[in-house]
Amino acid sequence: MIYCFLADGFEEIEALATIDILRRAEIEVTTVGVGGKVICASHGIPVTADITLEQFQPDDKLEGVILPGGMPGTKNLLAAQGVRDAVTFAAEHGRLVCAICAAPMILGRMGILSGKKATCFPGFENELAGASVCTDKVVVDGKVITGKGAGCALEFGFAITAQLKGEAVAESVAASMQCR
Image (cartoon, rainbow, N blue to C red; front, side):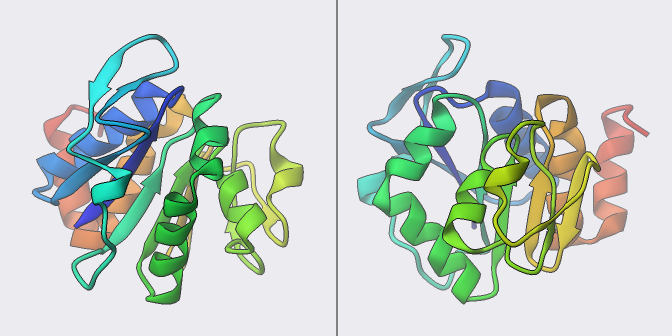
């Protein structure tokens, strides 16, 4: 199970395109609303989460967490102890920790990026404490996957898919979407 955390002000494309790709690959994804079930995205689109943060319980079924960027979505994710607990659980149990756009700053502040390669939205590089900062669209370093921004959301989703189901499945989904 992959959990994608949504907080008011999240970037729609980064969350929804990623979720769409994973579900096309038959990867189970649950959206987690931080602050309620209905979360208002950065461009005013309301999205109904599957569960609330209060209902979320990390367990052995957790295969990874996804943190979409956007502002103030990233700051709202960072402020939520339950989100930080989920990231810590995933990292400590060798599960995927994925963040895109501004959200890699959460990983940087938590020490998750120490000794890792990572990318982020330009201007947030100083927030990636301990990371070797790259300008690539998507960076995979072990169990940590980071993406640069909304325009890279498809590649971010394909990278997560490749880690969970293999490159062939990621390529098949991309081909079915006319991306490759």
